[in-house]
Image 1 (cartoon, one colour):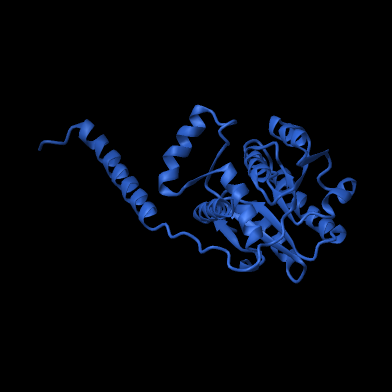
Image 2 (cartoon, helix red, strand yellow):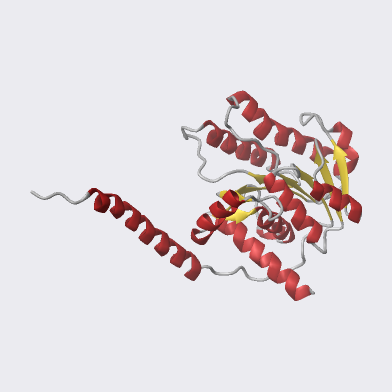
Amino acid sequence: MKFPRLRTVLLIPVVLFALLYVVLAFLRATHDEPLSPITGPVGAQSTVAIFGASGTAGDGILKAALADPIVSEVHVITRRTTPRIEEGMRSGKVRMTKHMDYLDYSAVHAQIADVDAVFWAIGTSSFGVDEKTYGIIHVDFPLRFVTEWIDVSSRPNLVFHYISSSDISDDSSMMWAREKVRAEKALTGFAKGKKLKVINYRPDYIGPTAEQAHLGQNILYWFFAPVGAAVRAKQIGQAMIEVTARKSQFENGDKLGTIGIIKHSDAYERRIATSE
């Protein structure tokens, strides 16, 4: 009996994967229905706050906020500065406050009292981090913040945008996935019945901004993007601004995956282009 050559055996899964990739990319390209334009009043968002602006996602969110014509003031609460933050400060649009204790926000009550929306991008990799520490950063930090924000805020309706992750569940074998679900549930549960909406973002791969990305990150982005499994950090910021503008269309606890983030980012760009 003649067996197939090893090269042929190894080539079969590669060909099958390539075919699957092409099919998924085709479906993604041909089933991309754009969002309808905003018909009612645009939600207020002239003053926002960003937590985690020194990280990958936060840098993109800040880039989007700096470019937005409606956002007039950005409060950046951070442990360290970055070239993007310094650029925003020079423009007069960013007010940076160095803050170290993310279980106590009393020192920044004045900064958060008048913001319409908060874009939360604080997080850390689970690599080398124990479950307790990971939970404090991803659950306790934001939950403590919203409890203080709602008490000091002068605004009638608040939106808290929380970056979670894709492929998470209560029964996941991965600690980080369980903790991200716990964070979503804790934040949404706290906001229920209050003047606060929590919107959860579940992106797959997040590509850094052009200024931060290295070659490997760009390769990963361009590999995953055609099948709808990657989003640029700036697109997350644009989506957050668009969701705030459409906040009457959202309920507390709503979730946006990668495709939803891209759709709202695209809708944002169309809305801004038509208003110019």
